[in-house]
Length: 109
Image 1 (tube, rainbow, N blue to C red):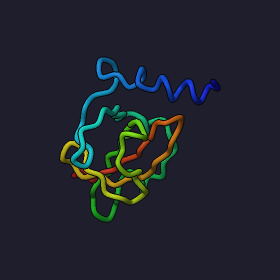
Image 2 (cartoon, rainbow, N blue to C red; image 1 turned 135 degrees about the horizontal axis):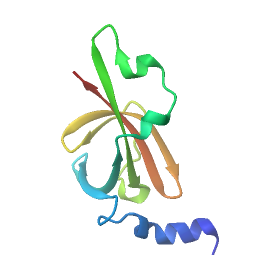
Image 3 (cartoon, rainbow, N blue to C red; image 1 turned 90 degrees about the horizontal axis):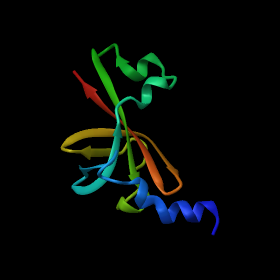
């Protein structure tokens, strides 16, 4: 068994609701996910990504981590995604070893 196969076998160990993951409503489906509110703080971003000067609306960003096989459909950039009733826009979606890292943005007044 190679490392990728071993990680796929053990992914349930990492997705543990007693640690970092919690159940959330994602597009009407209850999924075990981890939400990272601080992920964008260390990344380089353009000022216009964070604040729309013409409208006076700032953009809040989070990253959602979820087991790829738990998602009915893999999100695509600029798709709407509803997380716990709040509407977000998908800004990125990357797969790594069976996990999806989904960047989400929402307007904040």
